[in-house]
Length: 240
Image (cartoon, rainbow, N blue to C red; front, side, top):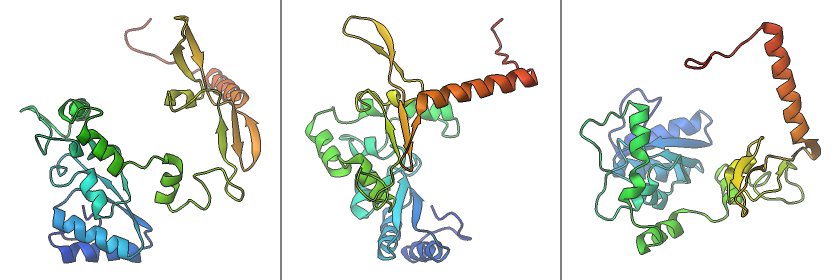
């Protein structure tokens, strides 16, 4: 919190001054990290008064102070990653259960422990779970995301006058986001057969339709030719 400031942010006045400095440097939004509740509240209030948007990475070192619901009520526009969400669903604690040898600087350690967070939250479908979902998450993800970026006049929905940038697929990405991969995703059919489905079929950029499958094949060929030209070989230890 307070990146770019010469001195630590230790008061509400410091927080407001820091936000103003960012605005004066041309920022149209600020990414926050955790800090004391009173300082965060002052910063978000000043941020809102100046017409800026606000995102926050509720870093594990500070998330015990404020979770995603609490900062949203203070005026936060969007939550980065997902830190702060499971903490908002705790019913018997304010901080996750850390092992004694936990090392925040060890990414594998940090991510593996983060993955266990959901075992410590309210049960899916419970009153607490539903309360957080209804309070924090916007159901219209594309349009609300565009609004959070201040770009709803160009993107976020299919309307006359907005950018004609689309991807066309045959599968339902709400069932599996991996169908948006260029190569699609593996699926088990009702007949117990493993098949590959999805993959972007057409890409529309500025209203121009491109065959995404053909583009992918062209790129694959270009990479293969470049490897052959340079004599490039992939070596993976343990494989012959």
